[in-house]
Length: 485
Image (tube, rainbow, N blue to C red; front, side):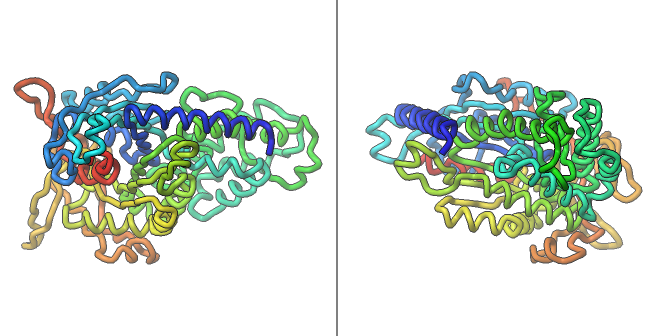
């Protein structure tokens, strides 16, 4: 074993031991919140915190439903080097006039939520366990998809990325990058202008493949789509190249420059994320925009299924023993959540949940086998629609009513965000196999559009009423309910 690996392992073990000792005095859960772009991570965290602090009615979250939660408040976060999740700014967005959705997650952030509660367990009362800290760690799901890169060298990654970009559902997005690659010899001397041009075209291909028209999910390197403070750095300025003849390329060749930068990306971006944040999580929720994938058709659904499997393979799952708690904590509870359930009538919520469960079936079985508890849910952290009935040709149709976002469209109808509209989104199939496995899984008459946030309700005593939601309480019960018993 390399001495560096031993040193890193020892450092990690001592840090985990410190976390465990701290948890004995002040019980804490590190809750990871992740999901691919536009899955609703920022909205989920903001709504979760606001509902708890505002003492919202949550009938399926046992500690709240039974009146045992006494007080919930924010505390300074424990990791000084991690940006704070800007809860106050996101609340300001949601309660503005008019309200607006907060900006999406672009980097890792953290927030500590303290819950004071009455315990039902005798031994907890004797030890004075009446408070639980929830350290919420918000990070882009795209970064998770980078972890497999740790097992691949530059040549292996290049071959896989080029093969993937040649798939039928990616060719169009990759055509400009492919054209540029045919004009470049990897054996030529390294040139910064060439490296920049190829890298920019590669990133443009990744962005286009992720766009709504394609809706693809497996698009590493994740920081190419969400660079944060690394934008423009050499570690983010590389591209896959044709690996034929790579063993004979000179040290000063373009190939060598790209390979060096790829290794720098793994060393300075991927490994620190795994070591400092990901490996320390105890609970995890993965938010998934299943409806966007259904809109993208069968290729997007297949790509999402592959992404979910790859994401869960990265988790260190299983029941925690004393040994693992001391030196290598595991994620022992995971929730997969299909977001934006409010874009459907309630009669399709269970169907959306069943589709998600089938999408995540292999991943969930693997985690269950390891001893972790895994649950699939359909939810909306903030409900942007209400339900109604519309008449069409004498038939009553169950509709959702809301303000479609500017630019959304159904058929030839374009929305400008200024007026409410009743939409019959269609019914998801009762059999999830039909939605996922058949060549024409997505019927043409099923439509999903995005909506403006609901108008906030100001309280006479100050502050705002909890946002309406769908099944947020069930998600909380699955994630932390056992720790508040």
